[in-house]
Amino acid sequence: MYKVRKAKPLELRRLRAVLEHQLGVSGVGEKVFPEGILLKISRNTGKIREILTPSGEVIATVLASTYTFNLRLPAAKIIHETVPPPKLRVVIANEIAKDLVTYGNSAFAKHVLYVDEDLRAGSEALVVNENDDLLCVGRLILSPDEIVHFITGPAVKLRECVR
Image 1 (cartoon, rainbow, N blue to C red):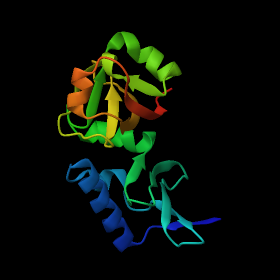
Image 2: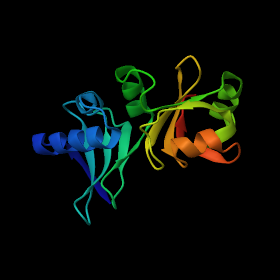
Image 3: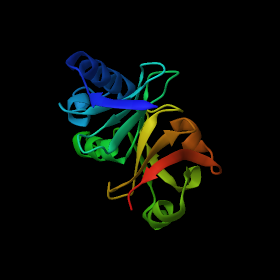
Image 4: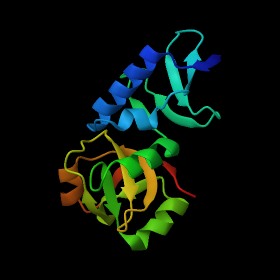
């Protein structure tokens, strides 16, 4: 069971700080988590499980073990607009982009044209095409060096794609 309530100012500051630390980008926390966001709280543990827009759309889920975020598409869109390329991006070939959005649950290393060198395996990443159009949001499986050098296997586990 969960209860949903408005975020308190201290919680809001903490959530923003965690997001900015996780992404390595300052100033993005206020845009992703504006005033008035809602929190889904576990009744058993009292911990935050999801962050929601005032209309109830999920922005991010909180990993209980690390207190980091699994970003959802609304957050990815804000980050994509806020953070200039190539930061936080994995660039996929245009020929694969449509199939990736339609069928994909993973982006494969052989289709990756560029990956931000500041990302690490396990980092949240924005998957974009060559024109920097947001396709999906996901988590890197391989490090940037491995993605560049490997020609087979999944590089990014996709969570949600633009439809």
